[in-house]
Length: 117
Image 1 (cartoon, helix red, strand yellow):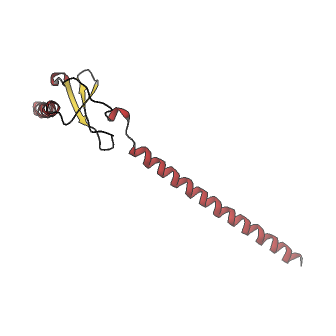
Image 2 (cartoon, one colour; image 1 turned 180 degrees about the vertical axis):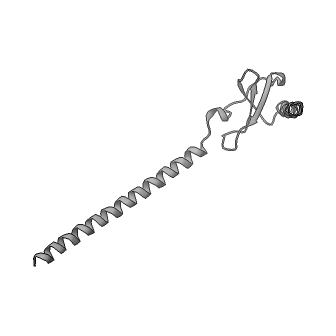
Image 3 (cartoon, one colour; image 1 turned 60 degrees about the vertical axis):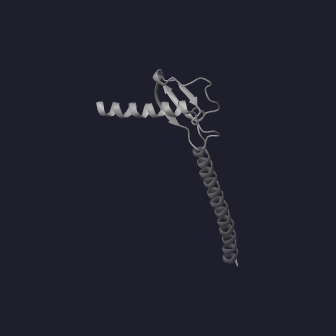
């Protein structure tokens, strides 16, 4: 009789620990999924400096520009960010002919610089 009571106690303990183990495993999996989701959200966000909120009202003076890049499709509006020779960033409207001409000029300047090296 004492053996069966001990075995029953051990069985109850094993079952309760087993179910706790399942709960812990489910919590661990849930946390990992939440972390993965959060990581995906963070990767899809763009840094504010990489998006244009507004465009410069002035014409781009290409002589003062060193480089440019187009904003990603994740930004709320399309844009071209020019980088001046002093390292400042200027947002411009990509549909502007003046901006497109400056982009073409800078592309040409990059090719010339590469050939000179």
